[in-house]
Amino acid sequence: MLDLKALHENTRIDHKSHPFQLFENRFEQMKGGECILYLHWHEHFELILMRRGSVLFHIDSKPYTAQAGELIVIPGGTLHVGYAAQEGDVEYDSVVVNPALFQDYLHDPIHVQYVAPYLEGRVRFPVKPADQDRVCLTYYTLMHEAIEEMSLRPPAYQLVAKSKLHALFTMLARTFLPQQRSERSSRSYFPNRERFKELIEQIEAAPTSKITVTQAAAQVGLNTYHFCKMFKKLTGRTFVEYVNGCRMTEAERLLRESSLTITEIAARVGCENANYFTKLYKKHKGVTPSQGRLEKES
Image 1: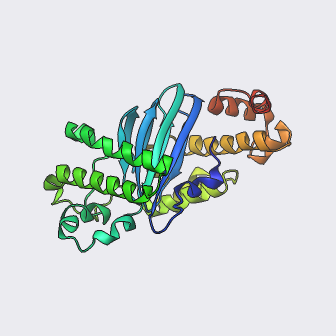
Image 2: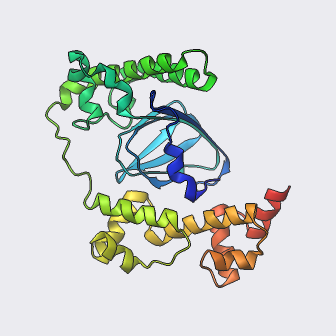
């Protein structure tokens, strides 16, 4: 499953000369509601092509359900999180794209007119383009072809993938830009986003540290009521549920990678009561800690 400490590495880009990266995400036997993508952000665009299963994404506090075959467009800088929408396997390909990939088009007036406004954040593509205009389904072949190039890596795949991605951005811009020209990039999608980012980074870096709802609310600069309301809207979980989910994922990692006893792991993730830890672990992972350890050993 996910290693919280490696979350930000999942947005790495290996080649600065061609700043894009493919991640093939595969999850088996997920529970409905189980987190498959912990709350995070990055400066890159992220294009998600669903392969199997169903996922509920929260992107800047708005929920979107994605099924196999659908494309999700996540602008740079947005907070996003994902949960399995139903029991079963989940598979999706994720391509992160830094706007610098298209910097050699900066002197092309057509690129500046159509694509640059999206790269600069002045306007945004719809998160689910085909829901807004079914013609976008015909563009998804470009995404499939770009992914195939990145996966197989034939000679000069970087150039082919780049051309496919630019064509995809251009076709989406052709479809949506005329009706979006009046939108402003400075619009705030929800208050205190930067402070929420700092809080989430803190939780991800140290999921077992103790932080109360009151402390978290103060850190973000909201009263407890508005903080709880905004956090639930942002992540689809209460603050306590989200923190406990992070802790149980850390416990899962320790069960898999360490020789610590279950009691020791419970204490390590902040559960002094072993019975409560077992109950909490089963709620989040669908099995008891003992069963989880046996699964890793088999």
